Length: 206
Image (cartoon, rainbow, N blue to C red; front, side):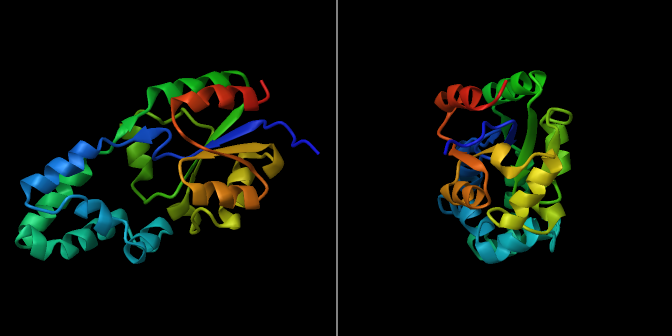
């Protein structure tokens, strides 16, 4: 049996609507004598990351824990804090081609939601990126208390869109998130870049 045509779009933030230039972190690491990729490696350690993504820790506390872990390789606590603060000042860039499609489908009456594993800094990030008002709903794991790919996360996202899972198309650049969405009953597409925009237009009912 063919799936119902999607009438709502649910997008991941990082890797889909927002992108980060890896040269920024690499430049900070060179400046402070840190190994290549160490900032992301430490920041994304699951035991450190999971509490901030579920609202148990603030973004500021998470940043402090990353700096603490970098004290020795950075050459002291002050240098570690300075390196992390410099890295964190860069909040990424909006992918304008994706945003254009978001505007296009919303203008056609398709609801668009943001589904992101994020910290309590998300609202400030969306404001800084000029994305306030560009989406119908924002589902932030740290506000919800549960993160992708948990079925409860996707259930909450569909409820926020007031759309049954079978009518929601979810787009993410991570396989594990796509698999989780499909298990929760959503249509899901692994984002591979701008070539996929044609598919999104075709998949949505407008």
